[in-house]
Length: 419
Image 1 (tube, one colour):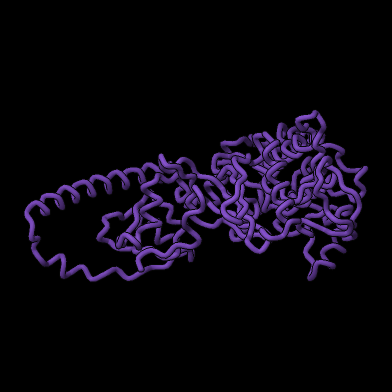
Image 2 (cartoon, rainbow, N blue to C red):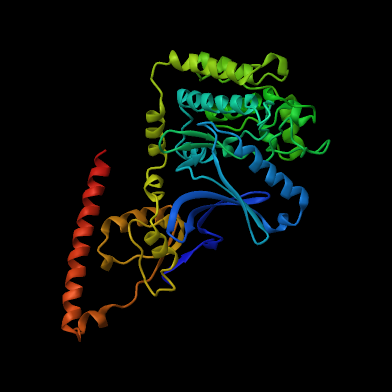
């Protein structure tokens, strides 16, 4: 079997390319929208898991997320494109962010025994604060403020793009002032280690709860360690409620003071608004010894994920069909333009003439991303003369085209490595 892919295929007018994540009640795919005219654009498709599609309460939560996201228009909030249903499966589509969440970035830093650059941390956090301020102050069609509390600010829900953009995602458990779907009394939702003390204690929450959660995320970035991590949910919640916050002694004083204020257990002593927090972070950045902007963040992401940007390039209709349909069409190889990060087994053969593509795949192999498949024995076919002279001419033309293509790819690689 030359190509074996995980979680792909048609879904309504979408082609599922690979599964990005699997959560408690939904799964997210990289997908391509499809119409009679062909593939249109890459999207992130979030689909409610079948086991929850029959539960009206979960369906309503999923629909609420879509209703909230549809009304939020901010550069640091991932936009919603569509809410739909295919058979019994509810789904929504969002912008596909070419990048990674902060959790992946923190893992890569830890592997290299590094911690987050404090000014990069402040830059990302300022964008998150501005997004949360918008979500709180934005108004509905009747002019009423949303007063939206995200309630799940965590590294998994902060995306950083290879272009230096920052996006807040997943408003699935957000509390909105005018919502008819509310959490039952005493029921906790969200990631326990990032909950505010008032949230963990089942008390009313407001925007200051998200400020605490962002403070926990900043602490983790700056220290390289989880702030709260008990052996059980109860232990973790107990730490959230009572553990003394260790000092960030190695961080710049201006950032340390901001984080300390964010992590004050009494909400009245924290920053009272996201705007106030964002202003403090921007002021610290203005006096930083180095300048940080989107281009610097982009360079930082490229350093952390040197291969991934290349592997996430947009797909044409032909590229998608090459990867997904290779087996059924009896083909053994894919090409350098394909989304090979979605594959678990790919045929690697020098006969393809794509040395650049093979080199990239071998680096992924070393990281455990794909596994090899033995190439077929080509000796018999290579030793037999062709039966049709016209076919010989066609093969010569194809070979020439492949040589030119390989040369272009190698040249592109040289330029890419140079920069």
